[in-house]
Image (cartoon, helix red, strand yellow):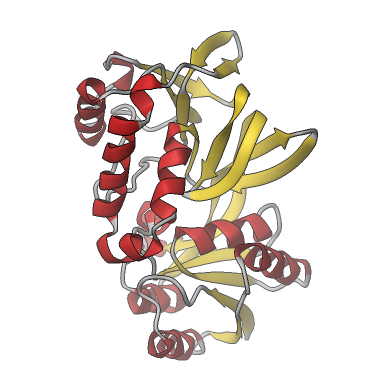
Length: 309
């Protein structure tokens, strides 16, 4: 019987002890289950990496996109499979994989009707005061205004868990009104022979990018290949609303005032003065003065529904 390590976040919005016990019972139909409890985000990443190093076949992340992000960072580039059991607020990565929103349904699917597939990651190297750290993103990256929205939303966890997408939308609208109209471009962005100054940017490399529940937000009608980069020159209500409407409808956001869309990007560098915030998959990575983003195909082995392959 294969070993599956279950790494759960008990602070996830839908998590309960009873749900965890039910999930373990379901998984034991196929796997020898080892349940581990990280003490922090960094601890979850370290545990996942240790399990992969020991040759564990499957490491499952039970919670929201945060715990998935940490476990993915731990097992990326190894032979260990990531399994996703959604129990968070939005569960974007689970949606992208076609995994049911119900945690128990996702567990049954993993046991009864799943296969493995190779999925891309984006490697992010951020430098601050001469120190460089490396991270992996599973579906999206943001620098500047996008990361600031994440930081502001995460500062009120009760509202996040209670109101979900409404809380993110309210936070974004508040910052657009109060902070961003006066923001000057402070990012020097380069990709190949393309150069631009920007006040913020978002990077998308899978089919959707969203904090708004089940509604996908797209930069363009076509999927990113390999990355699409949305550069922000300025953000005010008059262009924020067309941007939200256009992204929901899959229109080219490069046609919206104040935005530029770069498609077909495989590597991106950013110089920031002053430093800017960075987020990956909705997780705060801290500030950076210099960042390099690289698309890495087939970097992560993931358990997905057999019907989607």
